[in-house]
Length: 139
Image (cartoon, rainbow, N blue to C red; front, side, top):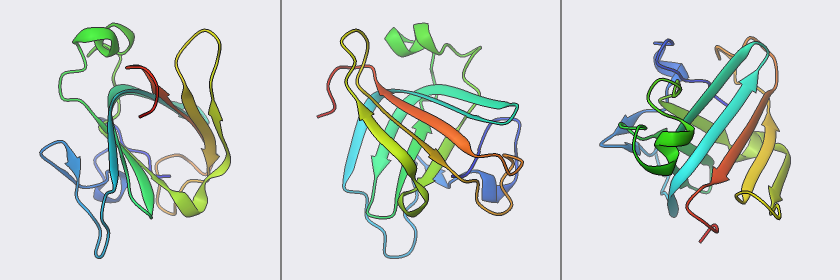
């Protein structure tokens, strides 16, 4: 996983985005996208959270934060003052302990752990992440 936040400027830390979508790597095609997600992650003392959109390819899950996280339910949960991540890259090959959860109360969510990629700002500590489907269901 690659950490990316507004306070981190290294190009490797931030998956390339254009127009609110991730830029595909060579030969990559995104096959699914979902809006209305809440994203949280932690690695050591670093904590990330934002509302936005998920993109899925055969290689990775990319979360891209909404430019205006201050509207609607996501804005209430992760308003502009709380959102601190621009994008987050989760390579599928590195996912560990991934779990799809359907709680009785609350939103369906996908959780897991990923090791940081070399050069990541996550200080070598595993990244515990959660993608919560705030707009209902997953489809």
